[in-house]
Image 1 (cartoon, rainbow, N blue to C red):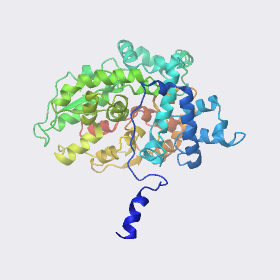
Image 2: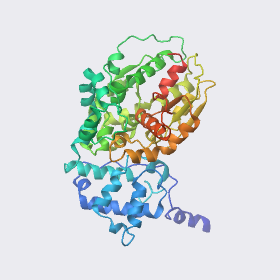
Image 3: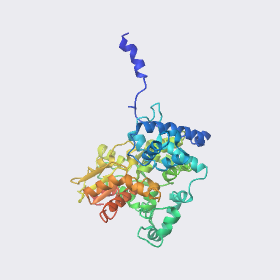
Image 4: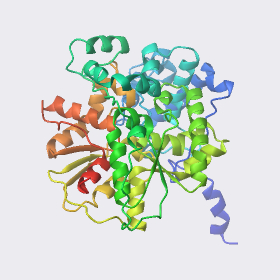
Amino acid sequence: MSNDDAAAPAQAQRPREGSLDAPMRHPLRWREAEFYDEAAFDKEFRRVAEICHSCRRCFNLCDSFPTLFDLIDESKNESVDDLTKDDVKKVVDGCTLCDMCFMTKCPYVPPHEFNVDFPHLMLRHRAIEKKKGETKFADDQLVKTDRNGTLARPVAGLVNWATARENKTARPLINKLADIDPDAELPRFNMRTLTARARKPRQINSAAPAFGKRKVALYATCFANYNKPEIGEAALAVLAKNGVDAKVVYPACCGMPELEQGNLEKVAKNAAKVSKALRPLVDEGYTIMGLTPSCSLMLKFEWPLILPEDENVKALSAATMDFDEFFVDLAKKEGLAEGLKPVKGGVTLHISCHSRAQNIGQKSTELLKLIPDTELTVIERCSGHGGSWGVKKAHHETALKVGRPVASKALQVHNAFIVSTCPLACDHIRTGVDRLEEGAAPARSWHPIEIFAKAYGL
């Protein structure tokens, strides 16, 4: 045996600075008592904070990291040991659970021995707060999307009037009761849900290359079902154009809004309910298509970490594709129907954090590049919105600050369409554009599949 051969195993076992391995995540141990033990959390937080403080690669991602670094640098001993419970709370409150530190920046995520998962550590703190009953009442009510959507639907016009930013009568009261920032754009509601609209018969293009070759169940998501069913209608129209007669399914919300509040028990209940309802379709060979990346991310990655033993969750995770991921796959394997025309005026496409966190590449970019002779500007950076986080009075200005580079780029190119894989992020970007130059943002926001449908003339 040569000296090199003898040295190889020892060299392979040496600790490395950073990691070249693909990130992996451990299941959340949310059903164990230690998960909610405050002393255990505090010890883990300070361990991770020390690693982050010595690295600082993630300083420009969100408000959590500069807050953490400033608190340590300005402390008496410049040490994580100086951090108070209030300091820790400030760091946690700055996190939007976007996962970008885990996916794109941190060199110490598992399987590295440092085992850093900053977003799930922040989630653990919120779960502790939830268990202690410290979640604010307004925050708790804001994320009950199925209840809110059901109640708002019959009186959608009245609700939209009351929640509009320009309403100087009702909106100030809503802002006060729910701690909403006056400048924040709130989702509008619709009287006809996507599930109701989908009952209308669709003409399936039998001449399309993919006719009869794909089985799709469109997971409506709470946002597309209650707030913007036009997204789902556009997806159904494009599917029909390409020979696919899709079902629309919506057993319940994916639970992402509840995840933001640390309500893991509620997320687990929704995961069990939805996966059980959709399992027969999965077994029949259906692809489950998500319309918004946050929801696809939950079905693919978060649910299996919350209910790792649930076979329905495992099966659903493997069968789920994001909308753009599906259509790009369709284009490559079966081919698309003819008829795509240029979209005039140019498109500014924002790739949301939860699209990036799925680790599927820029699928919406690939999708929109299939439209001929259309100017496309792509922005792959956090919008700063963070779901319900970005509309809160305490965070809205920070959300705009984080998203300012996105808004600045959108204003600079000044395309006719501002598009995002995340509809809420798109409205937030429009707010940021108008903040930079009043009246400069397009009148409405767009989803990539709406642009694709527009290119088909649908």
